[in-house]
Image (cartoon, rainbow, N blue to C red; front, top):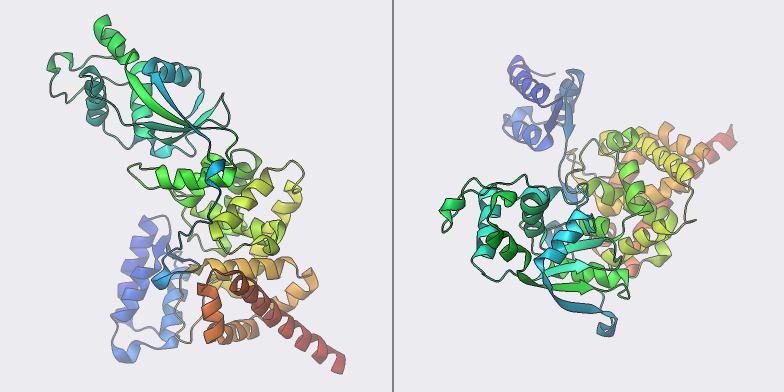
Length: 431
């Protein structure tokens, strides 16, 4: 079916994929397919290309993820209004020595799992921050979540805190690239004259402390609005900072499961916690409850994190087993098209968050017996779901974030599955 010319070019893609650990992004494959001659662009050729790559040890992955709401796949950043009186923020003038002592005693959260972006600044930029302090140039304000007085979370100012930690506490940073104090080049904190070290310690800063009485969902929105770091934090990264505990541990653990990675064809990025957000979405629709959805996705997922952090919210072993079960069923039924929109063109589209949620919940509530019927009838499932994806109303429900559309898409996927299962059972009765 594949001509020698196509095979020769595919071998180059195979070689590229093997150099990258056996994976190739599907944008490369789709562009390769698009470059074929018109007579070679058939469904059979398209399928044969993917089969050839898989046979030669290369997995085609997709880094894109479709999200609910917005035009052209853009996210909705709407925030539910809240009572401003619930915002309890204290402004304090402090000496840097107070922050330095907190860093030394590990009373400022520099959790590397979340704050891996703490090293964005070069040594020269860190050194110039120290130089600015020596020049008595006022520093921008710092923002902290002070809900736990023994463990402040950094809302804004991570790079500055990191520079101070490396220079004053760890003493791993030596000054470089200075513009005014060139005589101090190559010196560490302990090598500076006391005049200079005292100037650092006695520098006054303004710190805004979000107090413990502020509700967690309000803290989330404050964090989202205030954070101005060099790399904008994703919503899940913010949740990871604000909901430390059982919830963050569960999301991390489940995101590393092989069944999850295989069902999503390794398409979900871990470096920005995209994979953990999808785990949280499973928990939200299967355990927290779709009835809790209020029309604002962020509020809903924040609520799921709160739910997970409750002592007796879920049995972790049961949750892990149920999560793996759903992922295995999804992969066995839909293969590499799991959690994606389907089209008659046969192209594999990005994972869709709304479809992922609907399939997770529908498979979760199915008995093993009924799930195995869907596996046996997977070709029919594929066809029926393709028909559903061709429905204008269903596509509209996938894009919308209102409560009615949210519930409707779960109902449609569940009804599709139940229809196939019931047809099969009726056929069995006839015999």
